Every structure is written in C-alpha cells, then in structure tokens.
Length: 325
Image 1 (cartoon, rainbow, N blue to C red):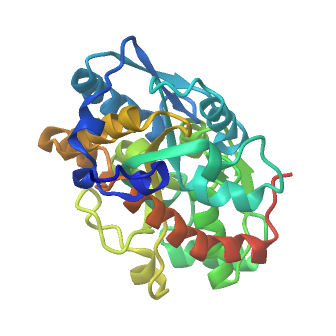
Image 2 (cartoon, rainbow, N blue to C red):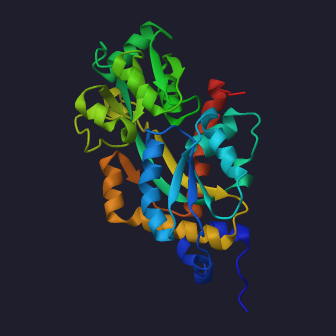
C-alpha cells in the first residue's frame, strides 16, 4: 500500500500532487469568514472581497469578510490563529504578517509558522511613491533633495508601522541617505485622504487602493517601486529609472491562510478553491484593472516567498533598529 503523505509533507506538495480524495472529502457546511487585518477600503480589503465572492461560489457557502485592523495585522492574525480549526476561517497573510512582524516584535501572542497554515498565494501589489497635489516636488529626485536638505521635516504617511509601504519608503530613504518623518495610520484609506488634503507631503501608495487617485491627479505619482513601468501609469518611471538605483524593487504581496490544525482534507479543498478562483480570467482581469498582479502557487510557493523576503528584509529591519515592542 502506498503511504499517505504526512501533514508536513502535504504542506510542501504542489496542488496537483495532493491525493484526489484529500481534495474532495471536505466541504464547508455553513457560512465562512475571511479575516482581514486592515480596515475596509484598502487594497487588502478590496482583494479579499473580490476573491471571496467567487471562492464562496465554488465552495457552496458565502464567505463574509471581517475587518480586524490594528497592531500591524496582529489583531487579525491572532484571531485567525486562535479560531476553531474546522476550515471555516480564512486569513489574509502577506509580507507584513509573515515576514516583517516576526522581526519587528520581540514577542507575539502567536507564532506565525506554528499557528497559521499556508493555503496559497493571491496577488502582488505594485507600490508608488506619491506626493500631495500641491507639492513643490515634481519628481522623485526633487523630493529626495528636499529631504536631504531638511532631515525629518517632510512627513510621509503609511498604513501602519511595519507595513510594506512603510518599509519600502524606509528602504528607499536608507539607500539614498535621506530621512523622512513617518506618520503611521490605520490603513491605506486614511493615508489617501490626508495625502489628497495635503496633511502629509508624501506616501508610498499601492495601486489597488490609490490607483484612481494617482491616475486622476488627485495625488501625484513620482516613481514606481516595481521592476518595470505599469500600463495603468505609463508615464511614471520606476525608482531605478528615476534615480538610477539599480535593482530597487518593493511590493506588498498576500496569500491566504487558515488555522494550523485545520484538517488536511479541508486545507487541500481550500487551496484548490483559491487556485481555481485566481486562475479565472475575469478575476485576473479585474485584479489587474485595480492594480494587482495575480500570483499563482500553493503552500510550497508561498513558503518559498516568505523565506526569500525574510532573507532580504530581516537584515534591513535590524540595521534600521525598527521595533514595535
């Protein structure tokens, strides 16, 4: 008789390698909840609601998005980690939860590698350095020159300490030798509101939440943190193009998790439903329309992405002396 894979081994297998029975033996028997660690209106919330609608249809149960913002996503992550492991709780976990927070916090009320089970990747968020409409900085070099002349005098907003947006700006500032004043918010929506109102000078904005404001001129994009220009903002250069900073790239990316002790059959079915949803052409078209790049990959690819980013960002966080407790 062929031995069934262990739970640890099954987590590492690509979806196609999982036994058919493991993918088919479970189905949700009541409405499900999808926990999001940010307020409604931001890119994370937009993505969750987009995928939850189609994924719920595939699973035969509605999926209700539950916003649990605060503590750099740790409030939502703890709620997911402590939820009943019955396959009815999902949690959006991106690089802020799985890469940055373990390095930013000396102590967490849960252990991300122990208490959350990886299901699959969902999307990558493109980030742009942007300024308020009336800013005298018309280009990224101009903004950096002002920051160099007036250290810590230019305010920039982010959706929270330890967010990908925060660390992208701090990484950029460190690499060019300038200092900004960080103003953390609770989510991307209030950052956009204050940026448009001129309360803060600058921000790193994700295209999912801020794309319309960037395209309409209500805020001014200076440079993209991506490897290449984006069709939605074709005139906006990359950071590498704007200031000659070779190989500079920074993204927010997200995947889907569930409580760690969720049974293998349930986890495999959720992984399959997520992969089927992200692969749908209309879903992908909508994701790209709102500034997201679809990401394919089950638990194995998800784990590889985590390890790659930890290798890149943990040394940066230590060098900056960033801590949240």
